[in-house]
Image (cartoon, rainbow, N blue to C red; front, side, top):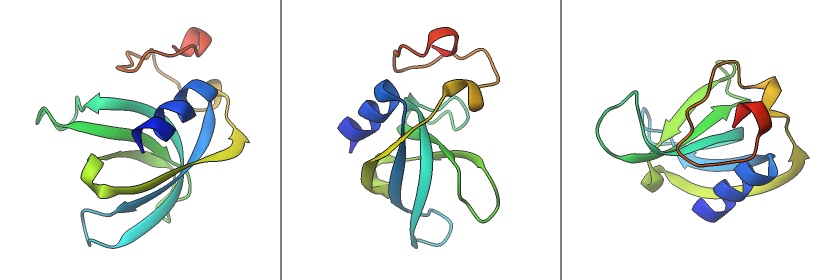
Length: 103
C-alpha cells in the first residue's frame, strides 16, 4: 500500500483508497490525491499516517489523515493530477517529491 501511495505522489496520479472509517468502522472507498506520509502535525501522537485529499466524500472535499492499519487497499488510477489544483499553501512535505514550486 505504501509503495502505491508513494508512486501516486511521484507520478502525480489519483488513487482509489479503501479504508475503515474510524467513526463507524465501515469500509469506505474514496478517490484521493496523495499528499504525504508520516507523523501528523494535527494529531501530535507520533504515529505515521497517510495524508490524502478526499475528493468524493458525501461531505465534500476534505483532508483525510488515516493510520496505516485503517487502509485496506490503495490502487493507482490512470488519471493524473496537477498539484497547482490542490496545493494553495507553502508546503513542508515529509516525503520529498518533484512537484516544482509545490515541492
